[in-house]
Length: 424
Image 1 (cartoon, rainbow, N blue to C red):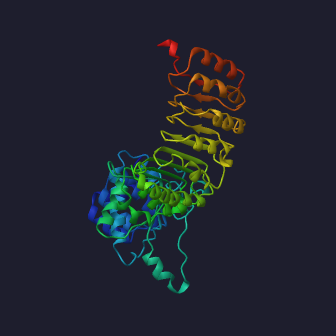
Image 2 (cartoon, rainbow, N blue to C red):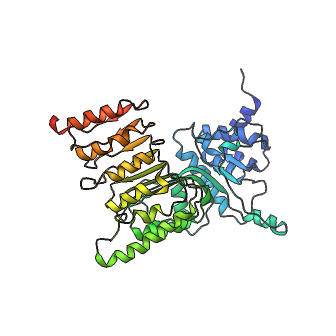
Image 3 (cartoon, rainbow, N blue to C red):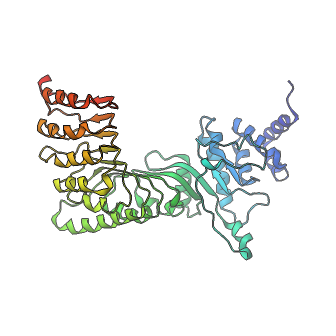
C-alpha cells in the first residue's frame, strides 16, 4: 500500500538533517519512538545524537534495539555522544527526561512496541537499582544535576580490546569529566590495571553485581586494594579470581603476604550470597586455604581450585570445612596430588555424595593406589553424571575397577578416563 503519512514525515525529517534536529524541541512525544527507529535503521548518527539530548521519556532501551542492528558500534557511539553533551550541561534541557539508558542486549522488553509514555519494563528483566533520595526543598535542583544511570548486563574492563562504552568512560576520566551511574550484573577485569579504573568503580552501583571475574594478572597487593570494592558487592553469587602473583618466595615477604591475604579474605565476610568460588593460578594459597574458606558465610555449590599450589594441610581443611559439604561441582585440576594422601578426597566425596554433580581432577597426577582408595566413596555419589581425571598415571586395572564401581550409578553418563600406561 501507499506509505503512511507518519512514514513520509519521518523520512522528510531525516533527509533534511538540520530541519529534523531543529524540530525535536517541538516534536510530539508520540513521534519520537518511530522517528528514532527510522534513524537507527538509516544510520543517521547526528539525528540519533540529537534525539538522545532531547529524549522525552525516562527510559531508553537502546540495547534491545541494537541487538537487531549489525554492526552496533555506530549506534552506540551516537547515543554516547548525545549523553556526553548532556553530562557537560549544568541545566537539564527543557523536555529531556532520560534517567536510565539501558544497554542490555538480552532483555525482554516491550519498549519499542508499547504505547508511548506507558513503558514499564517487566520486573523480572529489571536490575535492582537505587536512585538517590532528595529533600523536597532541593528536589528540582538535584534532578537537574543527577547523572543518568546506565544499565549493562556484562561490564568488561579490558585494556587490549576495549568496547565502545568502556572507551567512552575512559575518555571522560582522562578529560576530568563526570561519569554516569553504572549498574551491571557481571563485572570483569581482563588485563586491566586497577589504578586506571578506580574513578569508574566509584560510579558503579556495586550491590547490583551478581558475578565478578578478576583476570588482570594482578599481584596480591593489587587484589588487596580491590577488596574494599568487593565487600560492597553484597549480592555477588559467583566470584572468579585468576592469575594473581605474589612474592611469597622471598623469606622476608611472608609476613606481608599474610597481611595482604587477610585484607582480601576479610572482605569475603560481606558476601552472604556467594555460592560459586573459582580460584585459578593464584599463588598465595599454599598453606593458607583455611584463611579464605573460614571467611565464607554460606555453603558453596561450586568450588574450583585449579593450577594452585596446595599443601596436605590445605586439602585436609577443605575436607572438614562446613561450607564444602553440599558441593555440586568440585574442580581440583592441575593441583599436584602425587605425594598426597587421598583421605581428604574420600571425606569430601562422602560428605557431598548426595549433591555432587561434577568432579574434575585433570592433571593431578593421581596414581592407581589413590584412585582405588576413593572408588567406594565415588560409588556413593548418586547424582554424579560427570567425572574427569585425565592423566597418564593409572593402569587398565584401575580403569576397569572404576567402571565396575560406577556402572550402578543411574545418572552417570559421561566418563572421561586417562589413557592407561599400558596403551603407550
